Image 1 (spheres, rainbow, N blue to C red):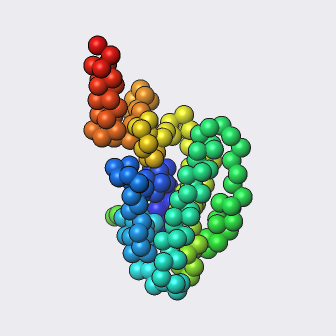
Image 2: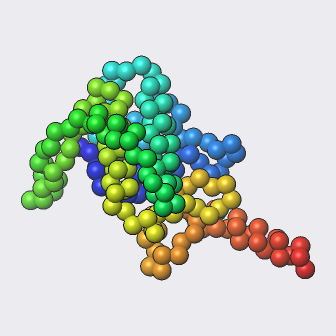
Image 3: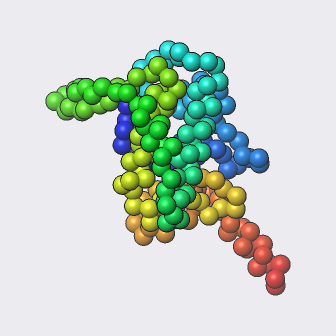
Length: 186
């Protein structure tokens, strides 16, 4: 079963590059890390029986992540989105539709993606990325304003004035830095 909605999942995928370490740490270090992330995010519920070389999945995931980061940055900046490479990846996404009962009387249509290639395993992420690029309100898609923080988020606050990925981390660092600057000036 594959979750194919939710713009947050794509931004969480981008955020598998950590802000807390320099140089940036990467949560995707192995094929197993990618499989774990895909399962936790709802993109993969079936057992993955890889038919590809070790390390190929993590390389494909990192490549897709950087492509999505580039396209999202282009869209956010109001530039022309160079989506041809994403369309190539989407073309590999073979799936079947299935209707299942998820709760007593509640039905849900799901997509079951083929898993013969790395591109097919990552196709659900590419699909949700395409959905984000096409349908999201990009006034609410934001990159953290923290110094050197690579994280993105979807601002769902009531006033839509969120500036940091995490107030306790990046927001606090920015406020502390401004306070230190003011103290030096006095």
